[in-house]
Length: 65
Image 1: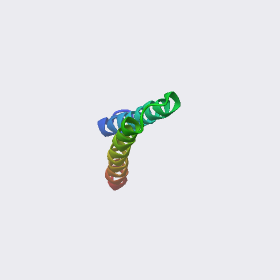
Image 2: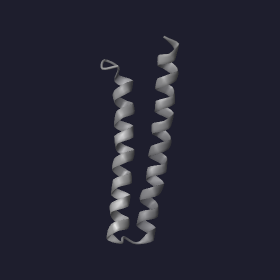
Image 3: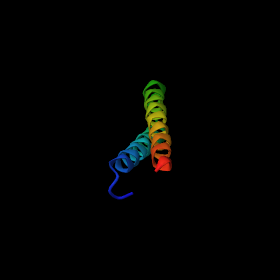
Image 4: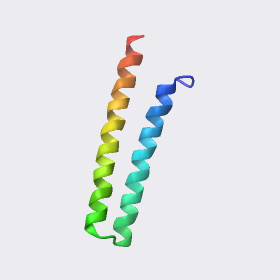
């Protein structure tokens, strides 16, 4: 696992999703306008979709060997 570049891409995608989520939650706590917070959550959904696809791809590719 440590020598697998796809594993690091998956970890980076998951950390990106977590970062966007924390940024969005922080915006809610500060009281940022609804339009901006909605846009941040849309970015989170898109990043989360990419992360899930990468995770499924990783499991599928590593399950074959």
